[in-house]
Amino acid sequence: MIKKLLRSNASWSLASNGVTALLGFVNLGLIARTFSKEDAGKWFMLLTVYTLLELLRSGWVQTPFVRFYVVSKSKFHRAKLVAAAWQLLLFFTFIFIAIGLPLMYLVKAQDDAFDLARRFTVIWLIAALPYQLLQWQLQAKMFFKKLAIMRLLFPLAFAALLLFEAKLKLGISTIALCYAALQLLAGVAGILFGWLELGKWFTNLKQERADLSNFGKYSMITMVTASLLRSSDQFIIALWLGPAAVAVYSLPQKLIEAVEIPVRSMASVAIPNATVLWHQGKFAALKTFFYRECGLLIVVILPLILAFLILPSQLVNLLGGAKYHESALLLQIFCLYAILIPIDRYCGVLLDAGNQPGKNSIKVIAMLITNVLLDLLALKFGFGVYGVAAASTLTFLSGVIIGWVQLKDVLGTFNAKSFWDEGVISAIRSFKKVPLPL
Image (tube, rainbow, N blue to C red; front, top):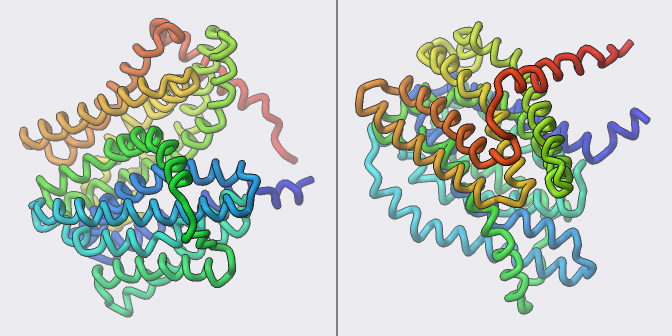
């Protein structure tokens, strides 16, 4: 039974996600330790710009491609879907090059924080195309062992490159170029292994392109807005304070992402249960479900948040070195909004469960506008990166308030005692009932 569980697709997926996240922390720490704060800040802005454009591109195509590929009964139709996905990704890439690149050169930032982004974003987008489609195809075919291998090879190779950087002295620009080369090599390896298909290009793909783009455009809007909510701080800091400030801010923000890993995992599992309760009209049970799940998540992430609050200097020093000592206070400030993440995320879960994605989009857009305005005010009045971090706390608080108002018919008026008793205390009791393995 245990061997069967370990060999299951879920185990391979969970293991690859966990190890990939760990390698992400390792690589970020190596970048922070190896290069100056200015170069590290430029690297973080390159990652921010690339991730935003990549999400815009993949958010439009990935979900519909996997969905249509899985349900397709014809090998020929699947080959057409593959070719249509290639064409759409290339089309979006060329659109980004035509529109995004000139705009990027018009942006003026302190100490040229967007230097690497201007030079390498397009190269990364093009180099990542085969590797990206390889992962989607393996996911659609449910070859999770192969997917885990390909997802791990790239960050491992990049980590090895960064470890040798101390001796090679390649420089940040060469490292950025090598990053693109490694992604391209991963995609080429997929072709050589026979895992990556090119599809049927020279057939009529009008219907397949329409199916993929029409399905994906709705989910993409919320995904990109949520990404902008996360990255807007970096953009504003880069324009106002320069790349060194971006590096100081990004390091503790990356640590906080560790809190979001269990939140994302548990929220995705909760969506089906919440959907059933909503459509059965069991709103009292849905409220109890909301309290219990939020309370459970708060109990799960609380030890991590306490560690961040008590040992901020040690953790920041472990990841980036002593030169990032200013990041310790930022990490403590981020803990204030980290405790709100479960409630904010589950407000979104309930809105999606009730088939109200429009309200969820409104909430995220309102949070984005709030965050940008508060960031600008914090910088204008001289509060620096600490003011920007505090603005994130107020932004998440506003998101919780908006979400709760949108769900007032289900959740009623917020009751702190009920939330504590039915959520946090109930979760603690459930942990006590779990028998310890012998």
